[in-house]
Image (cartoon, rainbow, N blue to C red; front, side, top):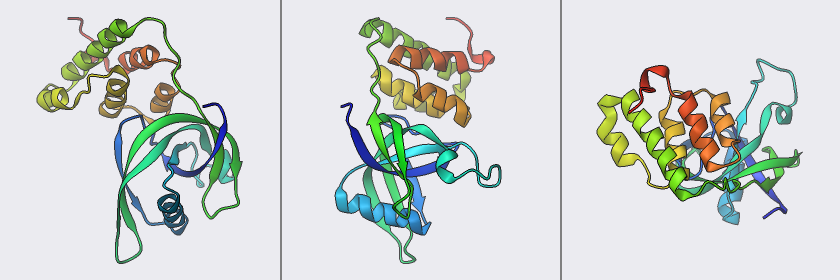
Length: 203
């Protein structure tokens, strides 16, 4: 799991994909149409990385304006439209680190190394307890959506962290900080620390 693997990259501004999260995307630029064709032909995932600076903000080359950490995106659905654009649905998979960017395709690509979460050593019970704390904070934060949150919240602590990262009002930098967390428990504790103070009332 430590070997490099070549991955097409789909950089997106202020977006971080988390494991288990379904993400719809509209593919309209020609370079990403080419990426989609290649992904469909290979059956392999592509990578989603966050754009750190836009071309209006910086004159740096594109590969220097995107994050070096991202998430594999597994294609689940693709609908081609008459104008050549596509609507696709991907699901987040493994986290990775970019080892080396490549510019030999119409789109940005890279050799990446998968970056699995470490074993925190605290045990499943502590992870589940932390996940329950995060869920309780979400329910206090958004009481009007409590039923929808309860129904959507996964039992698995890792997936609960992914769910919470999408529910909380976080910016791209905060989401990437969560993605970079070394363990599941670290990810959950970071999320608790990012909950607005109004929802941090103790049980």
